[in-house]
Image (cartoon, rainbow, N blue to C red; front, side, top):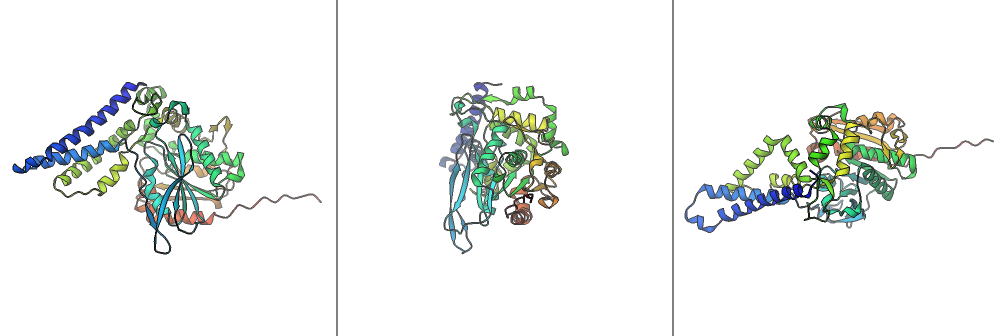
Length: 421
């Protein structure tokens, strides 16, 4: 299915549904129907508004929407999002808080590149800004990157993280959320061997598939069932003529979204039914819980084909990170080379995407790290999203992460060389 035709058909289908929603909304909202009041028109208008908004969101990159935070002085401080490092496939962005005293905790959040934009971790950023100097990896939509920019696979991704860590310096604390956890661990090990002075102070891995075989989920089952040939044939398409990346092989975000929704179809169906009913009664609002969630959830991005396929093959099928057999740019990455970076893992007891056991496996791989530099936390009752953005994160996990950062902020002591007399 590596054709522009299939990609354009999918985009045309999305565009048609957006148009149908807009048409139904406009038709049913006409003042003329006030002469013949009927709940049918209110229901049609509500369906149109919800449908138009939902399908329009799928091709719009969400804004960070972080305008200000309250400082220690009780005043609102404006927040500027600036680019610290610019790269073709992703930038390192900095959340600069104007007028606030510099924070000693420098945190780099490695956002997932698994179909959604980095804004998925917006609430995580908001929760850390009062106490930390925050940087985030902002990955670009592959459909907007010209073919001339070249390839981008998991080795390139890992080297991007290496460059970002080098830029920020050794007084950095890295927080990797979900998908990037194994590659962030590899990037840290790469630095430990190639440039020890650039290693971060600590590494917090949240709900990531370090060892996918440690616990079964629908994601791991899918990875075992499908061959790479089947996956490439069924999932990979070429970007259509509408976008700057025309001709680039990608795993389309719309296809990924269809997979996400199918996993919890009943839940999503009920959410939209309830929203349409509330809208028909005039009981909804622009920024209600449904819109806030789905404006982010439905906004999807394409991944390069080589990144998606190499992730499935090397991380999930071949278990290269779990077996400590990962290679980057021709160099074997030994996770045991990490000897001074404190490592903490966080898992949710009810996580159905990266189940308990998958992330904590990182600690066993860090054979060169003393027990005093390792920590783990299993959050009871928390699902995948809750361990980095929900109530469990705010009330329980965030304080633990900040304490771990503070406990490991001092520079490691230099080794003392004994000289012969």
